[in-house]
Length: 156
Image (tube, rainbow, N blue to C red; front, side, top):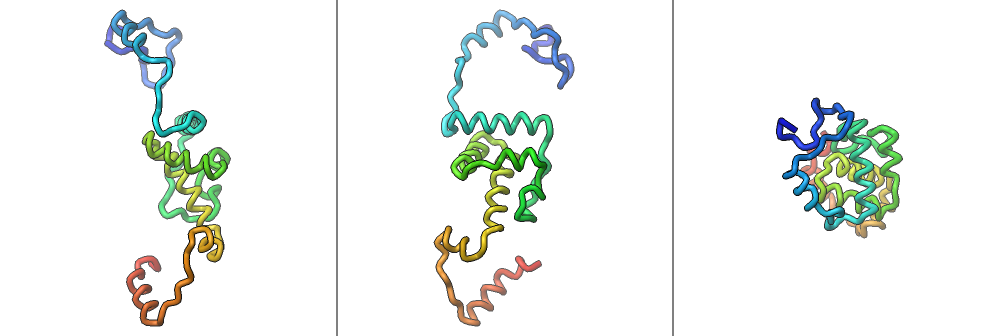
């Protein structure tokens, strides 16, 4: 258009009644853009799922997630849509976390990590130890005192 904007709305967030006609220079640029843009490191199904998140987040922003998460229930932390959205198989969950990191989608990264954190917090100690190969460690009274002293900040 006359302002040099290609396809921009007159006011941010206001849709145009009819799409603008790009200038000849812009048309040449648009023709050079491939129909498919490869996104390395992100599978097509994961990318679609990430875009679904972005669309919802644009319409209904997810509140910020505090760190550390304060509950074992994700529903106590984020609205229901986000809880249902991230209720996926473990493989997809970790793929979404990696994609969010790669694509720089901080809210999706926070949601995925919160889902993992809630799951870990809900595990009984013996199950956590089994899953993560934590060996039973027996400390002497002196070693336990040292560990507690070094980690006193966690008790605050």
